[in-house]
Image (cartoon, rainbow, N blue to C red; front, top):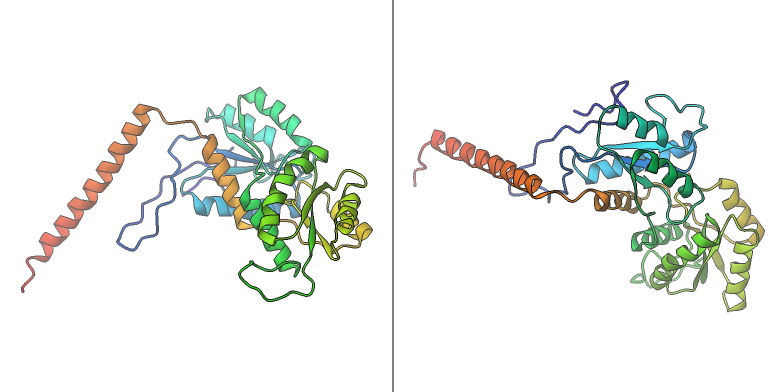
Length: 315
């Protein structure tokens, strides 16, 4: 079992699990090697009920997808509950790993693109020699997630193969994000992917830049859109919920929900972490192959012993 729930443990400790056997077992997920650095999911918010519900569900997706992953959530300082073993800041987790002599964690920022908190995060990670991965976007999976949220709000068809009409479907989309003009520019790439899925024009705008969303809506209307809608390219913790509400109110446009704990976001976190893991040495690969061969040999020996115990089968 994991020691993630043991008070005082700075990070979860991986315990190798048993590998499923049988002809009809599920395909094996990539397994994290013993001794690999932990994943620290850096949340651009202080600890609290709203951020906690999203990040814990995302980590649950990561753990279900990949066997043996060590993962912990690191918040920004300032939350009332930080400092406990349950709610830790990124700095506390990195310091705890260093004090325990554990491999330096891989830090994955929980943002879809550029964000103000990244500068401080990189500076903090540099103090401990930790790797900070790229942001989660732009990526086709984010376009998929936005599409799903639009369809859930009745603003888009679930897919282009379903040719029935939706009276409230948007004929133009403003992809809203936070992080200034740089974030909006990066979101434009995901916007192109989303436009290909929806077959409607998509433009990106920054919620935290005054007039950016309103200007994008006006642009869509000037180019022929009758029913523009807002689609947050926001996971949740990185944006003030009031920004989303204000944008919808000021523009008079319906809005989809933030991405939240959509499964594709969890998959992106896992794949981003896996891509940042150190490349195994020749010795580590040889050791892994030897361990696998031993496991296979033990299984074959057990099967033969079982067959011998049953005796010959009469025809």
